[in-house]
Amino acid sequence: MHSILRKSVNIRAGFTLTELMAVVIIIALLAGLATGSYKKAVERSRFADGLSAATTIMSAVERYYADHMSATDARRPKRDRLDISFANVKICSAEPDYCYKTKYFETTIHNGYTQAVRRKGSSTGDYALRVYSSLFGNKSRSEPDCLAYNKMGFDLCVSMGYSSCSPATSSSCSVTSPCVCSR
Image (cartoon, rainbow, N blue to C red; front, side):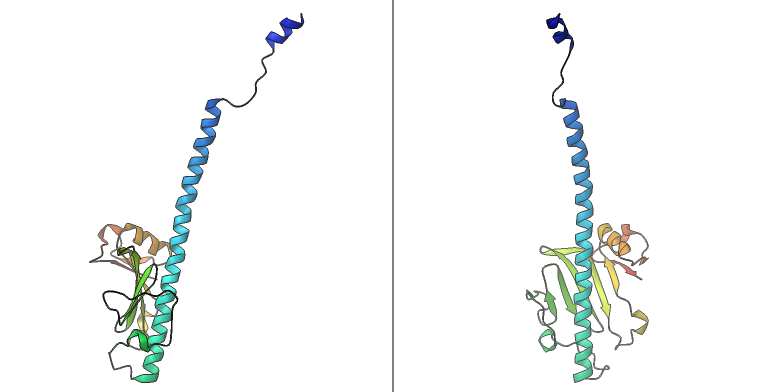
């Protein structure tokens, strides 16, 4: 009788292949979602760094004008005349006297504004940030603009609070004709 009882009891040890595959699929889906969220968070952080750099440079330009010339003089100061410095800055190829190149942005001094263009390798990224000077009659433009070059840039600008965009859809954005978004 003891041998009959032993045959009828089926002891189950471990997991089936189906159960293991279901766990692997769930983990892969969660990892995919986390990776997308992580990339967005990193880009939002880089956005803030670019905005900070452009604002810092514009403040230095305004201090330079306050100390050295009148606001009616439209010449932009060269970067070596400003009272700021950044770590790990390289020389820009396009306008080396007026540009700061960091790992993710090229920030250029223009007449009345600074513009930080997001770089990805040697090409233009998805967006740029433009900070205006209050010295050149831009008092109505006290907030910076976000310029979107494609859908990813457009979505980032909108997610960062720049919701008033012209044109209003991302399908019209390009490097030559960016969508300009403001707060």
